[in-house]
Length: 328
Image: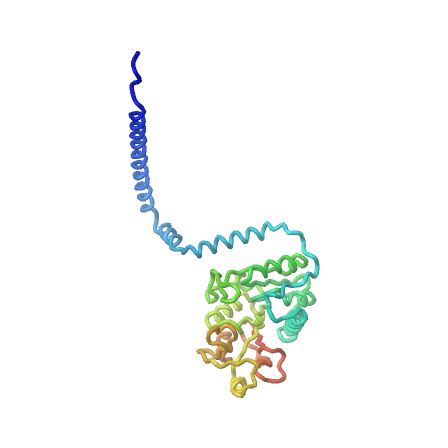
């Protein structure tokens, strides 16, 4: 009878050699495959190579933001939360310093100006730029008929969720969209810079666009872009209703005399700022620049504007200055 031919050390050594040989074969095969794949990549047409380059150039924070938005959109689409109670109060903590009564009063007054000054019609298709918590919805429900409609967008996703759940649910004529536009206070991680933002609506689709307390917080590049987009989405004959802090000889004199409610003390290229460190807090524009820009965009300003009470003028319709412009 033969003795055991191999001891355990010999068996272990042979096993290690076999595994190393298999690993070497796998590495060689993998390297060959990678070289082959690289050759395929080099053979791709220039458009595809450029597409790969763009994808690879995306910074990780931007990719994470895109994935975050996709996830939040899916959550909204498949939301199974029970229906809300009618007349549930608004979360006014998003608008500090404004009570329920003031919130509703301002909404009613502005919609009255839309009708009396802006010629808002019951059948109009309406856009609310920076809709917030839908301040205008209830008073607009009394103005728009079944052929009229409302679109609103904002940069705060939770606000849009509240609007859809509590306003669209009870009146589908009123629709709301979240737009991931950068705002230093309300959306500091936004993907889109405001001066590059395209409104998510087709050309010439809307009859009435309003932007209240929007241009009073935007600098020149953003204001120019938003005005361009307002003009683009309006039909010929459509109206833009917008509020500003406008600077003319009278308002400048009132500011210098200390009559203005807002201490515009810092000059900039197109007007005055209240806060040099946070310029978007309050922005006043030279009136002639605003008029010229609107004219360039095919919008005819109804003269004279309705100057507001902010500067110390008397007899204005509202606190801010109101402009109405007709699309040519």
